[in-house]
Length: 315
Image 1 (spheres, one colour):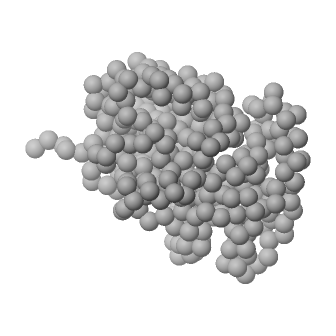
Image 2: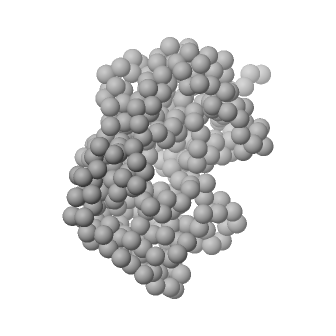
Image 3: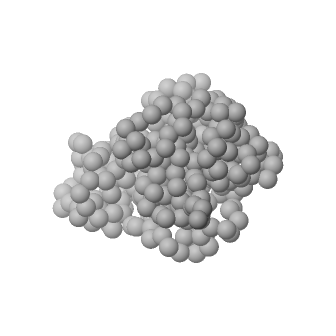
């Protein structure tokens, strides 16, 4: 009897991709192959096949058809023109593939329909490729996953595959401080990476047509509210400083030509936050939750903190 499982190909797997690997492996409907520039012990220790590739169209196409993959999920996190070049190769490979007619490009942003150019380095990388998808998909089904901030950044680093980003995220657990961008009352969204991964698995399984943009969210709120939740949970005040919105906007305006410098990109993330662009649209998100994600529970911050307290290792 033949293997009835779908093969899902994951390219450029990083932190977020590890959660997706684990969730796919835990689901008997799927098997996983990884497309990577090199081999890594994390995959070999889990018996995940790794196909080494230069991410060119022909290289990726041969892997997709050799493995009979039905979907290609990208986790390529580049913020320069290479993002567009490589994703165009991924799309071209899917167009030419005999088996793979679904593509999830690497996104994981916020409300991209209201704020397509936030953060700004997404406006010069993700947004151009979004337009390419709209015009050149040629029968390849695609969707862009948007989740706001990863809720994992509220957790100690040993609780997640997501690497801490203290220059971008307002709360620094290492020194137990908060640098709030703007007033702290700007609307935000947060979602646990594990639950984003569970949603991706449901999308891989569904026969319902994908929408061009798919939103998920565990909690809507503000950073002032989130800080109060952290203080209450740990019974410990968090010293806070505030960076005015005008200071952030002035810095970004003065450094538009330096958007490949990480320090500038970090402040562009501040701008993304104060613009409310991390907040995914609630009505659309809840409608899509009912449509696709009836089997996924999306946790609030307080629920995640409780889970982290009870669970050893990665949440």
